[in-house]
Image (cartoon, rainbow, N blue to C red; front, side, top):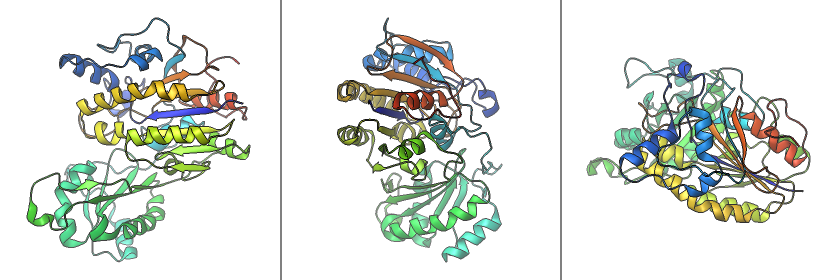
Length: 412
């Protein structure tokens, strides 16, 4: 029996979703705008291997436009198309859960942006309860912010006061940043554990511990960029509200290898093996390692987080382009690592257009790029109306029970 390999290009949208107007994202196009910027800079994107998988055709199915400077091949080697999200958010858990057959029809709780960009955005009562439960003197931030910007801005005050830095985004998230040495990594984890049940009452999907490092005498140093987030991030995520493909796989005695933040996104549920990695290069290496170990009938599920955290949220178009090209270079080795019965799919969980105002996710369609011997060659899938079509296709491929949502992308 063959295996399945899912690689999520975190935030790699390929055109505004049909309902983008409801999110203020009409015109967003992560891939299209990166390709346009690169062509205008005289350095068109070099993505020959992604083109062999049908990425330009997938982008055209989503947006109606061909990505500038990225030529399509006449006959892609697999099945290609795009998918719009049926779930009601543009957040990480909703996107990943829907891929695995668990759509999210309800609204998460969110912290609305106030007229004052510096907050406060968190309700006073739960914040007071949390601060008291943790024995903290107070907190800093209490606003919408980019994680890298806010530690630059408030890192010195954090060291002086000993108070954690709290912030949010357009996602359903409460994020807590603290210095690994001065505040303590385990202490940061502990106060985030205290926060989770309190913010569950507000239907907040995730509490995220965001440790950082930098000189403890940073107060005297001045300047920006002296604080750096580390790989010791920890996501405390509300578990999926219904079984996912991962749960079905575990129930059938299969292996599920989660690479990167996959285990956190599913609250550890449906994961038999967890592999961490610092950055896309290491995460791709961990995907190879998982393929070496994964038994027949198993699933390797990887998230390449750099696209989102380093380039999308930071609105770094050049960095995003370089990361796409690095992935393209890595693709032949991944394809060569497949066994004859294996199925590979590349997709994404939402958009994060680096040319778009602000620093939040964008409501976009995502690519569905399938390859491997079980996949029909040069099959156009069009624009699908749910990410769950991916999960339903994998369920059939792995011989698992059909999922309640989604339609398989091709006939058996």
